[in-house]
Image (cartoon, rainbow, N blue to C red; front, side, top):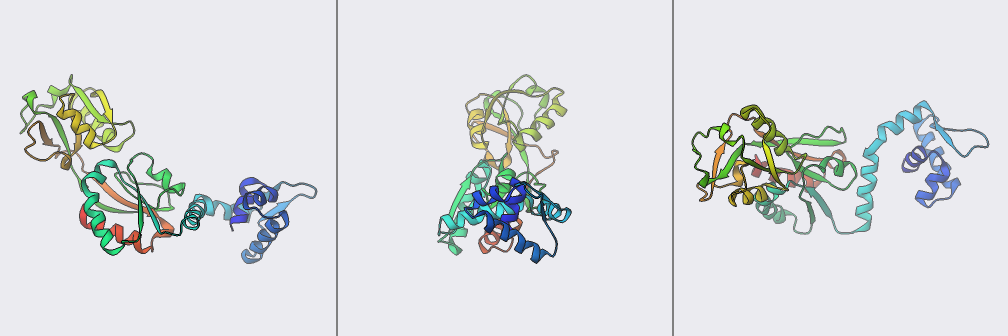
Length: 284
């Protein structure tokens, strides 16, 4: 199957044989054997030409393999390269800081031997999974690719935060007072930034005046604490009664959803299921 996939992608047996370090004849034999198993011709080669064409059945098979086979092969490569079991997880930075020390403590009780690699980011998680660079991800966005399975973990609210010494009523703030004030937010493309900017523009009549961007809620909160502007962050990022940061939960705003995602072929993996269950208990 791998040989056929590479022949279809490179357009020749020689291209596939170079990538797999096989002889030309071995690559051809692999495809012929697959055709016997499949019960149909998959590849046609013109006499005297090294280029090959896919038959309609070959095109259908190659389309059904798509990126999922690339992801599987990448994962196999990682397993062959390192005999230790490795679980690679993508998590937005704010979620990691707030919840994952507790989640990892519980995970380690059942799986002390597993090596864990975390990637604290938001915008590239889906593509990283399709590239075979991640096994699972906790994300605030829904992934669309059929090779990725997702389960809703729960929801959370966003909160408007600002320096307490601005003197704005924390019980029922007048959002129009923020129109000309500097807005501290996340880097471009991050889910919270997009949702918060759309909401604020509807409420104050103009796009918020972005002055500073940062990578996560901790950084945004520190900048607000320093008096550099106001922001919108998950409500759990700032504790109630913070001495320097006022907080108002945006209850009328649609809650943010949290999803647990993994590549489909890892759905029965013991460690993936264990991590998902703990995340559901903690984040639900």
